[in-house]
Image 1 (cartoon, rainbow, N blue to C red):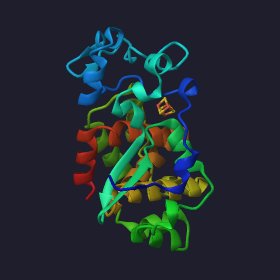
Image 2 (spheres, rainbow, N blue to C red):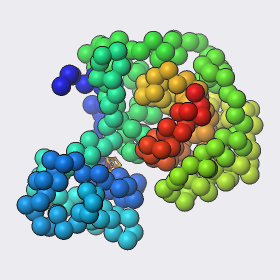
Image 3 (cartoon, rainbow, N blue to C red):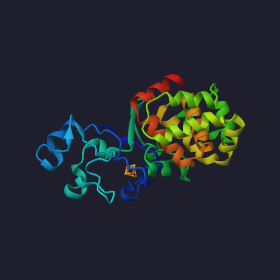
Amino acid sequence: MSKVIFPTYYKNFHCIAGLCRHTCCRDWEIDIDKASLKRFDKFPDISSKIKDGSYILEPDGRCPFLMDDGLCYQIKTYGEDFICDICREHPRFYFERDGKLYGGIGLACEEAARVVLTGTEPFMLEDNEPIPCDIRSFVDETGSVSDKIDRLAPVLTSSYMRSKIFYSMEYLEEEWIASLNRISDIRPTREDENAILEDNNDFFERFIIYMLYRYGPLKRLAVESALLVADLIIAGNDPLEAARMFSSEIEYSDINIEEAKSTFL
Ligand code: SF4
């Protein structure tokens, strides 16, 4: 396998496990890879909690192996190498571009969101790999992030319509739906959104760079997503929580991210 190129901030990411307020070991259906399924067959304490290739979640949505101290029974009992691929890899993502393999960490993980969006080092890739051109030109442009957003892609959607578009998609958390409802009640103007962008300039610069890195030429998706996060802040969410919710609800649902990509082409 070719070498994976990560942003330099990747080295700063470590799972905070028991300290995590939105653990990834809850609510998400885990598709266990074939090799792990075969390995688990020899361990009745594990295989008894698997059905149709996924862990049988507890009634409250917890993974059956998530212990009260926030740690994982499988890791504690059998070591880090024992767990299935998806648990080992989350929140990492990978993609290919121009024959190279790139990696990153997704904002659905609150610790990854903190590392990606509140770090201070400029966006760079490991081993001095060149930064993609659209990110380079976004970084090099002068002006505030709201000026840069205006130049990056036309915004064709009002906050009201944007909230309705995302409201129509599948969802995980009730708070997501409640926040979208508050946005459609408030109907923030572009001036309201610009005030939030200006108050959180570096955060939104880093958010747009994350989107451009992950989704390449989909500039409008980056812009509309940033404005949705601004609207979520106006609706009462903390910036990191707004970005985490957006990522968890949209990026980490295959159906939703495909719909968002085709809507905001
Ligand atoms: S969401 Fe992130 S910090 Fe929380 S348990 Fe999962 S990997 Fe660890």
